[in-house]
Image (cartoon, rainbow, N blue to C red; front, side, top):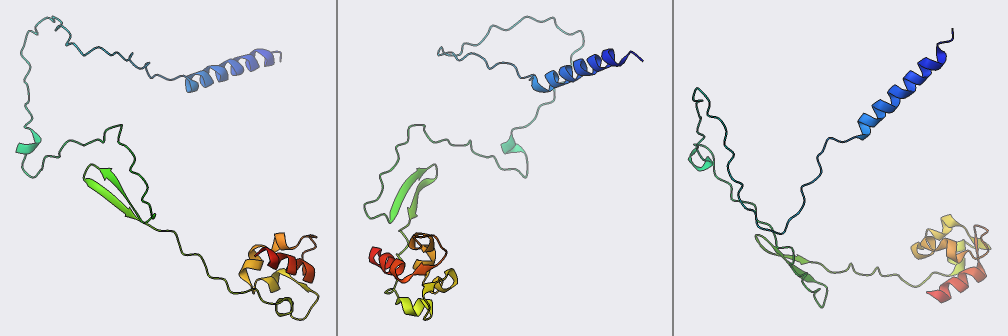
Length: 167
């Protein structure tokens, strides 16, 4: 049984050929871009067929019953300037093929936060504030990692007073 090496070589060659056909693309290269205007080519002379072939004429879409002609798609020019931002941030107008589109927006109002509760209120009379107790005051719950400066998972009274000074 010495046919192992030729068999493996054949399988490897077949795999490479198969992979090559998967990678190869049949798309022809794009035609070169020219800046010269298109000139109609001279008609090629072809031999006349011996028997005339029947030609079927298709009526234009506007004459076919039950259909409505669609207008050609309008495209926006490539160099449409971007409209300036409104001074108060409440409205902006953008040109479109069917007219101006006005977008009205404003920033969301800032949430109102009351004064920070005392350390004793949040800790429940304890020596530190746990993450569960900090959830009673959302700004502290959102900033718990930064308020816990010694990274022990709890906020002491000094850490809490230092954090409230930053507010």
